[in-house]
Image (cartoon, rainbow, N blue to C red):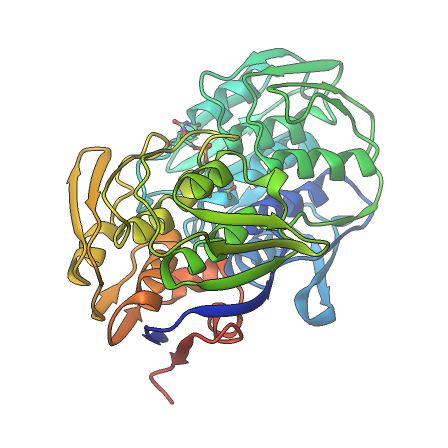
Length: 423
Ligand code: UD1
């Protein structure tokens, strides 16, 4: 199993090209099931989660070929005739549940394994299920599988989500594109990945309005056609690397980074003493003065502070001036990085969904282990500024969501390398 070894110290200077968004790509890929014609995605990130979704869609009968070293995914669901998403693939990644809506819309029935246990909270699918039921589906849970049926097809409906779930919004919007009549989805998630999905579906001939506003209206059509769509830039990858100069010093330009995708995150960066400047190519980030100041953070749905940047922000707060309070409101049990940061010398007190971080002068390198994707990268950020060597174990989490992290950071002067056991 690979490890990442980081020797912390100096400032980082250089530029990093932002990849296509993992979370956008994971919802755009199942959209192929909605059409008999090819859907091609450009600017796809090269990540293991994308390979897992490829395997899942292929198991459903889709044909997928990659071009330009994996950056282009050419998909055809012309012969996709299997409506069963098997546990062996689904259990690897929660986003596999995004095939439920498209399969149901395509076949009128679908059997999709529940994603199963997840390291960051219970993450049920009740909102996905009740939205699809409102559109006429009958859904039963048998032997760990959701058995969904829409005899006579899905029908447009008025649906209000109790919570603005990203996945439930994506499944509902995809299913509604081929339903009979109009669906109005209120309290819909407003994340940029939803906007990207709607833009792609529109290119495929879907009739949708209101994405990004909280109420999405979908006028069902008889069929969708083929399209080519560029995956939006990854706002979480952008935000992660914006935090590198916050913790290590220096100036980094994020090529392709866009302020509009970052919501409240940029306000927090400003409050803690970072300067973010829009450049012709993206965003340039540096500290205004020396050490950053402590700020309080509450994770919220977009445009609030994203839960997917909470771990990275905690790493930065470990060496900030003062005390910061981070409150996690989207997921339970999402502070698994805290004990690892403590091993590096951080002062963190976790009580339920709140972590209080007292900034220390310096972190120290240690052997650490990552338990989820964003936790892993928070340990790498911490290691960039720590004294001595840090070894981040269980790097497969990182490979799920960050493309070539060691290359991107070493190009900015970081002393970071990947070590394989068989090296
Ligand atoms: C997506 C992102 C993930 C991000 C999250 C929140 C993808 C592939 N993943 O996950 O990186 O952290 O949005 O921004 O895009 N919930 C329910 N019932 C449901 C669905 C969700 O109770 O039916 C709860 C979850 O347990 C969780 C919260 O709602 O506590 C947020 O989940 P949701 O917005 O659905 O996130 P995902 O789509 O799973």
